[in-house]
Image (tube, rainbow over all chains, first blue to last red; front, side):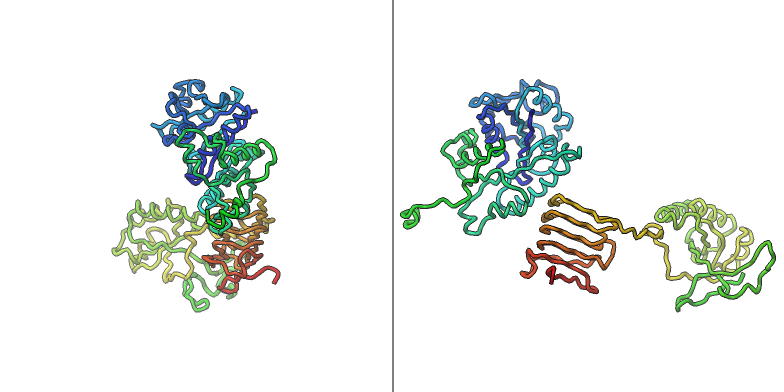
Length: 270
Length: 261
């Protein structure tokens, strides 16, 4: 049974594509057959983050328009052989997407036996974002612990509960998960940043993961390697935890407390 | 028929009547019929042009705004602002136009001596002195059909109300059993209850019921309104913030207090 997961947020720049890439890799490294699709037509960057930007021959819009087969457009990842990327078009825009076209592509992926299809949503609440979430079974709502991101995520949660195929059908709902990114325990302790509990209180949902703020994310995108594959990074560990929780495992939250500093570090302010 | 103006609480009345409660002394008390006098409210159509096209256009629009009120309603034609003495043919065109628009002209008013002749030609009565009452037909609102004060059971909502969502409880109370996000809007013709945190806007008594109240379990509202009287909360007073609070209208003032106090 293929599960369609949308990675969305409302707000831009919070870490949707970073998350889509990492979660996709995380699931694939556990042996699942995963496809990750970039819905940000015209501003594609999933292929950059995945490191396959120079291997894009056909894209999502080509498949929708019947200009190529799905197999021709799917790019197999070099590191994980059950992971496939469907890039967005750079030359067109979101009007090139259609509900029927998206449904057809998703059905074909289902028929191909994919375990998970991750839909990397663009920012906003318009056509691209709407179509990315419309057929979803589950949603990962990426939130920064910051007021505008929280407000926009609230809006997105409202749309997930009303403007998706499951919601419109009346007999199901999209399973919602919050993923907190760019979290800084030090700033939370200093009272400068919203904490996990604050976000949970406002949005009324438990988090499926907390990803700490880290310079590793930039290094990863520069290298074209999803950050979850950078084994030494706390970000990678946080994403591994999130994947585990998505698969139903119970994992305690890490990276939400200020790291304890040794005596000398505190003394000399290291 | 004698038309006269009388006063009704000091306001000149538009009614055409004799004395309402006078017994039918001028009647013909035969078995087949009876003549009685009684007040009748009537609209007047004061025409400033005799162009039938213009009259049909404007009147049709007016009828459409409140069809139940205007459709086939009796009207009298006021010629006082015409600026010229119309001839019979013109007036026939006007009468035709008014009928086409959906109203029924039954007389002429406020004309000159010449009006009498016109009336005779048109076979219509002259309803002489005619002063408009304070009453004007409800143009903006729907026809004055009394809406039943149906007390339906409250609209109960158990899901979180997210930013950008709007709930409206028409002619009843609204009960939300989940948090209401910032940027969400709750509207109720009756009371609004939030058994959870209220962060958005709430408008109770949306149709003007001043008895409506707002109740919530944790007060963080951006705006509270009851029957149109509203208050925006840039900062929430410390004694109310996050506490169970209710709001009500005290005359023209919106009051807030902790629940249970």
